[in-house]
Figure (cartoon, rainbow, N blue to C red):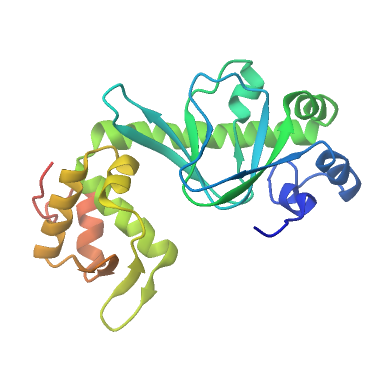
Length: 239
């Protein structure tokens, strides 16, 4: 795995980007490097928190695991995102587990150095507050999505978001690769694999999408949006 510049990695983090290069270099000197293979655990819910992680490359999923083994993905963090800052501030254990979804590299900044930086630099402190406020809004939206929306709505939103983020518009529609398995999609939207498979088939039958192995072609974005909204236009799909 290629060596990445820790200073440039820190600069991508919103609450470190306010620092001049000299301070970024000083901060980077405290950082260690952690490399994870796909599916390797970074930490487990309940583990004590000793520091903050910054994703350099790859992707890290934060998730909750039920006693039944059912997994709910909370968020996937990419390069420039931080992992574990909440537990740094409240002094508690990690509230969720984290694992790599692909080969990944992270910087590890010890809690003491991070908290000392926040104490002496109000710009960093306010930037951290904004980041935590954004996370609260995101989690509130996730709770609403999981508790009030049907599986078909959540799956439609998942597909729409992928189409917007990585889709290529062609004569056939909006095409994008679907790298996740149905089990991984189920974990992301808070359901089980069978319902993901069933709803994907029904979306195909209704002409909203076409699937070619692990590629999705959105044929009717308006109907997909209607499914998200749960409007009368939306197809009746398995809940």
